[in-house]
Length: 287
Length: 278
Image (cartoon, rainbow over all chains, first blue to last red; front, top):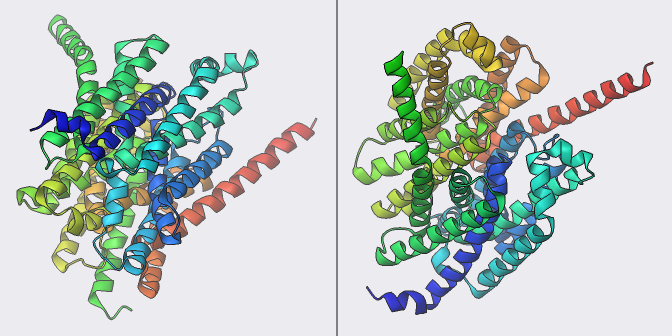
C-alpha cells in the first residue's frame, strides 16, 4: 500500500476535503442536535435528501439543487408545524418523512425505468449510501461553502442559540427570539445534512451527526469544548474511515467512517456503563 | 384482478402486516418511541443482507437482526427516556451503524445492485403460499401476546410513575414492547421492504390518535386505516404499476394531513371561544 498516494490521488483529495468539511459541520450541528434531543429531525432530513436527489434526476435538474431545495422546504414545513420546542413532534416528523420515502421510491422507479432504462437501481444506491470516492469539484466547493455558512452563523448566533436550547423559557423572557432561532437552526440542519448527504449518503449521515456529538456530550459538559471535541471526533472518524477504505478496497468508506464514529461513542460511554453495572452489583450484594 | 394468485397473496399478506403494524404502531405513537421504532424497522436491512452474505435463511436474518437491535436499545434504554439527548444520540448512532453494516454486507456479497432495492423497498407481488402461512402464524402469536400484556403496557405507557408504584414490571414491559416492534418489523420488511415498514407503523396510529383519545376506539381505527391503506394502495399499484410503497403510503399520508389540519382548526376555534367568552 502506498501511503503517499493516499494524499495525492485526486479522488481521495476530493474525498478528504469534502469529508473534512462534512465532518466539522456535522460535529458542530450534531452537538446542538443532541443537546436539543432532535436527532430524529436530522433523520428526517436525511431521508428527504434522497427524495430531492431522485426527484431532480427525474426532472432532469442537477441533484444537488434538488437536495438543497428539498431540505429548505422541509425546514420551512417543520418550523411551521413546530410546537413549543421549535421542532415538530416525533409523530409528525415520522409521518412526513415516511411518506416522502414512498415518494422517493416512486421517483426511483420512474428514473430507473424511463430515464436511464437500466433496472439495477444504481442511482438509488449511490444517493442512499453516499459516493465519497467519486465527488466532483462542484460538490467539493459546495461542501466548503456550507461549512463556511454554518461556522459563520454559529459564530454569530451560537451563544443565543445555546441559551435558547438549554432554557427556552428564560431565553424568551430575556428577549432572545427563540422561535426564529429554532427555525434558523432547522435550516442549518437541513444545509448540513444536504451537504453531508453527498459524502455519507441519505441514510448514513445520521451517524456522523449523532455519534461524535454523543461522545462529546459524555466527555465534557462545557459547551465550547464539547463542540470542538465533536468536530474533532467527526474528523477523526472520516479520516480513519477513508484510510481504512483505501487500505481495504472491499470495505465501503461510509461503513468504515460510521464504524469508527460508533466506536468513539462506545468508548466514551464505556466507563459510565461499567460504573453503573458495578453500582448495581454493589446494591445487589448489599441488598 | 382477484383472478391472479399473486394479487390474492399480496392482499392477504398486506392485510396481515397492516394489522400487526397498526397495533404495534399504536403503542409506539403512544409511547413516543417513533425514533426507536424507526431504528428497529430498519434493522431488517442488515439482517437480510447479512443472511444473504452468509448463506443463511433470509427470514432468520430478518428476525435475528431486528431482535438484536431491539435488545441493544432495550439494554441501553431505561436510563435514557424517550426525548432525552442521550436517547437521541444512542438511537441515531445505532440506526446509522446498522444501516452501514447492511451496506457492508451487500457490498461484500456482491448483491448491492441486484438485491438492495428489493430489500429496502420490498416486493409485495412475489409472495408464496408458504410465506403467507408463516406470516399468518407469527402475526397470530404476536396478537395473542399483545392481548395479554396490552392493558399493563397501556398503563405503563400512559403513566410510568404510577405504574411503577402499582408494582408493574416496567423494564419487562419495555422489553416486551421492543420485541413486539422487532417481530412486526421483521414480518413487515419481508413484504413492504425495510424502508417502508415504518410508514405502516406510524401513519395509521397517528391519524387514529388525532381523531379520538379513547384507547379502544383509536386502536380499532388504527387497524382500519392500516387495512384501508394497504387495500387502496395495492389496487392503485395494480392499476397503475407504480411502486406499491408509494401507492400504500400516499392515501394514508393524505388522511394524516387532513386530520391534522382539521384538528388544528378545531383547536383554534376552541381557543377563540375561550378568549371571547367572559
